Image (cartoon, rainbow over all chains, first blue to last red; front, side):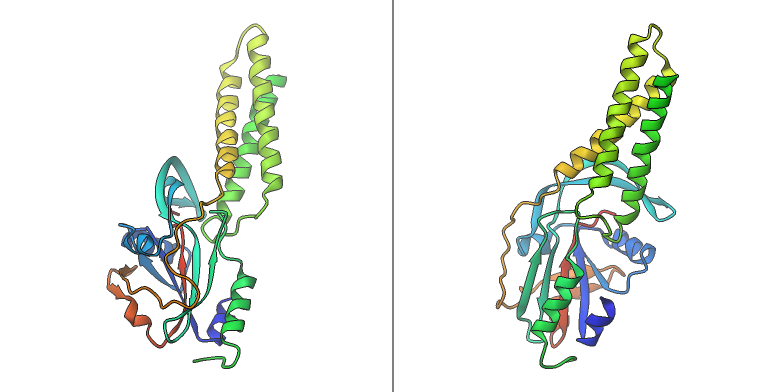
Amino acid sequence: MKSELAEYGVSVIGLSKDTVEDAAFQKQRDKLTMTLLADPQLDVIKQYGVEHHKGIEFSTVRFSLFGIPLALFPSVKTMAIPTSLLVDEQGVVRWIDQADDYRLRSNEQRVISAVKEAFAKQQAA
Amino acid sequence: MTALALAVGALVATLAVWVVYMAGVPKGNVPERPTGSVLIQIGGLGAAVAGLVLTFTGGSPSAAVIAPASFAVMMSALFLFLLSQRRTPVGNLQIKVGDRLLPFASHSSDGSPFQSDELADRRVLLKFFRGGW
């Protein structure tokens, strides 16, 4: 998906309630190239109305075994409902996708179709 | 012996499902319908309970059975419970297609401040995600 997005000049920015440290850790552990934004006070998440109040989260230690996070104690936390916004160069939202299953991220095919439909006339801005 | 086999088998099965499932979580590679995982967890739960029943009705309950069986019961029940809670609420999205991005400020993972006006003249896929992994 990354190469298709690059073809259309689309940058990916991820935002979650992780702290700067946790976001940095995830970026390094999962070798992510996208920009990760840290919103631990949920300011942006609340501003956009995507907070999920009864999200179940495990406290994981940063240590993981062969890249598999060690899930420890579950707790109920407020976090973001997985939501994707496709935004054009004028800052206008062209497509929104919101998961109804907290485990799943936005389906790649849907994202690529949305990108192609939104930016069909010109590939890169 | 049967009780022990059931208890240990249940524990191995339930932990194996947890490990395989969690391996996919950081990158979001989890099955939309985890039927296999659910079936194994139900099987493991049943086997662990059967092991506990056998050891308690057998005359001399064995810690070697009780410990793994109890752990297997907890882990499989937890897995099944968490899956049952996977539907997210509708939420209260404050933006719709055609609106302009709401201006916001945040911090990037390298600690530097981030303003949404850095996104001017750029096409962006802004992804809100759970975090926590």
